[in-house]
Structure formats: C-alpha cells, structure tokens
Amino acid sequence: MSPSATSKPFNFTEFGNVIDGKVTKTEKTRSGINPSTLEPLYDHPLSTAKEIDDAVDAARRAFSSWSKTPIEKRKELLNAFADAIDNYFDEFVELLIKEQGKPLNLAKFEVQLASKETRETTKLDLPKYVIYDTPEKYTETRHTPLGVVCGIVPWNFPLAMATSKIVVALLAGNCVIIKPSPFTPYCGIKVVELGQSIFPPGVIQVVSGEDNIGPMLTSHPGIDGISFTGSIATGKKVMQSASGTLKKVVLELGGNDPTIILPDVDVSAVAPQIATCAFLNSGQVCVAIKRIYVHEDIYPQFREAFVAAAKAAKVGDGFTDLGPVQNKMQYERVKGIIADSASAGQKFALGDEKISSGKGYYINRTVIDNPPDISRVVAEEQFGPIVPLLTWRDEEDVIARVNDTHFGLGASVWGKDVDRAIRIGNQIEAGSIWINHHMGVDKMAPFGGHKLSGVGVANGVLGLVELTNVQTFQVQRNGNV
Ligand code: NAD
Image 1 (cartoon, rainbow, N blue to C red):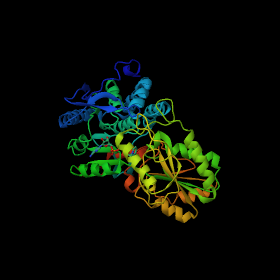
Image 2 (image 1 turned 30 degrees about the horizontal axis):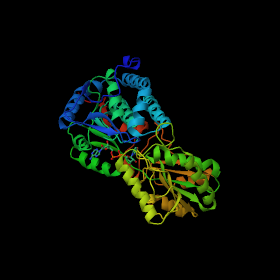
Image 3 (image 1 turned 60 degrees about the vertical axis):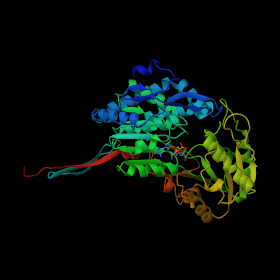
Image 4 (image 1 turned 60 degrees about the horizontal axis):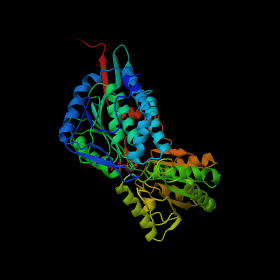
C-alpha cells in the first residue's frame, strides 16, 4: 500500500490543476454550484492553452519511461490507487453529494464503484497473437501504447467516469490528462491529486476549465487519443476536431434505452425494478430506461404498480432516493420536455406540468401515459426524472418502433418466456442487450453504442485495446544476412 493510502495529507476544499506532479493555480478561477441548494462551491482552475501545453509536455516526457514500465508494476500502482480512493471514501462521498446532487447511498455506490472497477480492470491483459512460429519465420501481432490520452468526463458520474478513463489508459501503457466537466470538476481534480504520490509526475494529470478547453485538447498535436464520454452533439465536435491530427477517438455517447415488457411478467415484481432503472440518479444515467413498452394485456396493472413505485422514492437532499437535476441547463431542458407533453395534451400518470418548487434543481418524478412515438418524451434522450409508458401488441411492430431511432446504447426485454425475450432481444439494434435486467454494465465485458450512441467501446479487453496501436512484428529465421 502506498503512503497516501495510509495517511491523509491533503484537504478537500482547495482545487488546482495537477501538472507534472504539482498542484498548480491558474490566473482565473470559477466555482461550481451545489444543485441541491444553488450555493456556490469551491474555486477551481480556469485553464488556458498554456496549462494545456504544459500538461501535454509533461505527459510526453513521462511517457517514455511509463510506457516501458512492466504491466505487472502498472497493475500494482493502479491497485494502490484504488486503495487510496477507499482511504478517502467519506471525503469523496461528501464531495459527490455537494457537486453532483447525488443522494447519500448513490454517492457511496459511485465511490465504491470507482475503486472496485479500478481493481477489476487490472485483471485484464493486452492480447498478443502469434500468427506464425515456424523454422522459417516468426510473426506476432501485439498492442503498443498510443502515447498521451485525454479523458473527457461528463457530469453524471464525475468520479467513476474519471477513474475508468485513468485505469484503462494507464493499464494500456499511456499517460492520461483528465478534463472534468465544468459542472462537476471537484472529484476528478482530487482523484488525480491523490494519484500523485503513487504515479510518476506527468503520468496522470488534470486540467480544469470551461467547455472551451475541450477543443484545445482534442486538436492538440501532442495528444494521441481521446476517450470521450458525453452527449452526441459534443461527440460529433470531438471527432471533427480530432480529425486534423488523425487522433484515435473513443466516443461513449447518449442513449434512449427502450425496455419491452412481455405479457407474462409478474407485474408486482418487475414494475419496481423498471422504476429503479428509469429514475436512478434522477434519470441522469446514459443507460437509464428511457422508453417503456408494456404489452397491452397488462398495461393498466403495470402503470399502477410503476406509478406506485415511482411515488415511493423519496426526493430531496442527502438521505433520500432521488436528488435534483445536476445543472440549470439540464433542468431547463427537462422542464421543456414536460411542458411539451402538457401542451400536447398528453396524460400525466404521475406528476404534472408544475415543476417542484423550492431551492435546488428539483423536478417531480413524471410519468407520461402512452404518448405518441413522435413526441419529445419518447424520441429524445430526456436525461431527467420523466419517462413515457407505451403500449404494444404485435412483436414485429414493437421491435420496429424500438429500433426507429438514431440511438443505440442499451435495451432490455423482460419476460418469463426467456426464449421469446431472447428472440426479441436478438433483433434490437443496440450495443448492450439485457434480458430480465437492465444497466448491467460489467468491467469485464465491452460496452459501447451503436448508431449515434458511440464509436468504439469501453471495458473489457476490447476497451483496453482501443487505447493502443496494433503492431505486427515479423522475424525472418532463414534470411540471408
Ligand atoms: P457534454 O457533451 O455536454 O459534456 C461532456 C464533456 O465534454 C464535458 O467535460 C464538457 O466540458 C466537454 N466538452 C464540451 N464541449 C466540448 C468540445 N467542443 N470539445 C471537447 N469537449 C467538450 O455531456 P454532459 O452533458 O456532460 O453529459 C451528459 C451526456 O453524456 C448524456 O447524453 C449521457 O447519455 C452521456 N453519457 C454517456 C455515457 C456512455 O457511457 N455512453 C455515460 C455517461 C454519460
């Protein structure tokens, strides 16, 4: 265990960039907002091109020795990093509640996830393929590190998304520069600072600022790869900006996950599980259930049980099930979708067009009762506590409706008739298909989107391989030399 895992040398109230092993200040700073109270939080850096150049230079210097560090040593250090996160468990939980608005239990879950998934990922190894091994020749294909990778992080899981980018990049032999979301910069900054007593200077760094530093990173000639998680609109800009330097990009983007409920389910058992997967983190999860297609034979009972489960969740700050929407931009967007349903005269099975009052970006859980497929609440990624219930009768028809979208992140089918559920699941166009569960993201299995939901994958060996070059190495054994 590293020294930082046994002692607590730094506080969680001051936030600087971490460049070349040092915490550095910027000329200008800004502060985030606690979405539960709308109070300003701590100052954090507003980086400029200068800080980005400094971080890239330091990463390039560090890369020459880090890339030669044996993978077993890299794994040892990454496990020490996971221990260090655990050592600061309470501090990260408190910071996550403040910056993201997560309820206590979900904040604890995210911090546990950050260290657990870091450890799990270190069980992976880069594959090597021996193509020929004959008296005449030896040919192998292997993976070499890309170089300097930039990890761009969204605001819904600010700690776990940062650590997942760090562990994959480092395990593959790269140096990494993290750019947190300006809405939730704090956990990303602190976790990189925590890594400084474990990794050599320049191996993991963080530059914080507004959205404007994103393009500086994605177009930077000293950066070799981008691991981006965020919206489809920004993902397109990232790909465009990275094209000037032909960088490798991995894009984990938005979703509009459907679930299909077969008529044979036990409604009282399934409806609460669907409600959990729809409203977790107030719907701000890329693989939250966002469209619920219920067979018409059980629709009325399902609606009743679903609404009851949604109502039972306690909304508020801290010891609750659901917190606020994370920021004003998203709050206004979700309000717009609710207003759209109201003005179209759609039926509200739960909630109404009035948004909950009081401080904080709180929105009541809202369930829209069988709106048309073309309505905003069905066709768009809501990313908030509002979800449509839809009826279906014909199998082919519901599959066509589910696939009639440019999203393709996740999807699930629930039914006692597992063969039927699998048959339907086999026809859905998405990167992850779950039968009788949803959100089953597993560090050992690749995770990514089809269609506009992403390019490339995270997780598993294939996720590790994304942040590498492929190298074919050939030895001629009977050459005339
Ligand atoms: P966003 O696209 O607004 O921002 C994501 C990150 O990109 C932030 O750090 C932001 O500062 C940065 N950024 C903004 N403009 C940029 C630019 N021009 N170039 C480079 N970087 C730029 O996304 P968000 O609102 O923070 O996150 C919510 C979205 O993320 C949702 O659509 C959600 O589904 C998606 N998401 C996807 C996954 C997944 O694994 N597929 C996981 C979590 C979230």
